[in-house]
Image (tube, rainbow, N blue to C red; front, side, top):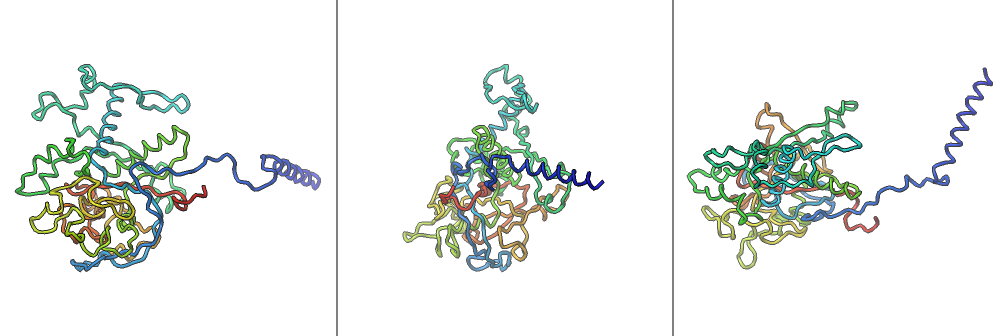
Length: 418
């Protein structure tokens, strides 16, 4: 019995010894070899915001005496951020991608992956939307020809489906079924062009409802009429397109595109000027020549003095020290953060964030999302770096847009030790 036990121990030891002789590492701890190289790309239209410290809180007098932005020192990880608000023409790329993907499926332009068996759209196929036979096959996408508004594209069919992972639940509930962490979303993506009429009583804004999103005159103006869910859908689509390209050329993927956390947004808006009330510094909203430095409402009934009656092009005025345009005024911007009046009291001081994805059945109070930056129709108080405000996630407005961020993976974009 003892001999058998000894023989068993010897056999295991021999296997371990023999196993340690292989692997091509010469007995050294070298790490796994032939790993992909990593040299991060700057996505087109984005700038790098380095990691740093931020003193959050009011930049000036709390005119409402609401105490919803108490002073606190926090640290933020570096990230890429769009240097301009997402424009009508950039958003149109998303809308037309969804339109084409629906059309390809109706036309059965589908290929099957020989390895995985998954179905994929054959994007090499061309679609001639002016062809009568093609239009007939795509009739489900269009309004009837006898429709009073004409037989154009049916915007209600323009929906984007995507899946996101609930990492918060995964961290809190070890062992949870992975399928329960995969959250499926579907968002109607066409901008709500009627916001220009709905937002203003006894005001003639029909030309903007007809033209603001469609006409080339407004291609480089910020897209509006976009709800929080639609902005998130755009970020998911942008991630899909970017990662699809990266995989096709055999490069590692970067982190997902997403809406900024409200404190990332404030940190970027300050442009390294830690206590400045405005992105350009301050303390004034005019320069030495008396020119207004952002697109907002400088006085009652006075919209055009700053150079823009409504919105202006996304690259208007001077960029801040990080190279970001219109971080004050033009349009307010969605963030990923849920709005709680007292959130500064309990969020962490490292990448502070608070999120809550309310169900349709929950009270509207739980659906408030932080918006930042103020807009073309707001007074100067709302364009301050430290001013917080909110809107319901399901609302669309003529003065709310968005921009994307992506967390930087590494120490610093300027680090040459790759």
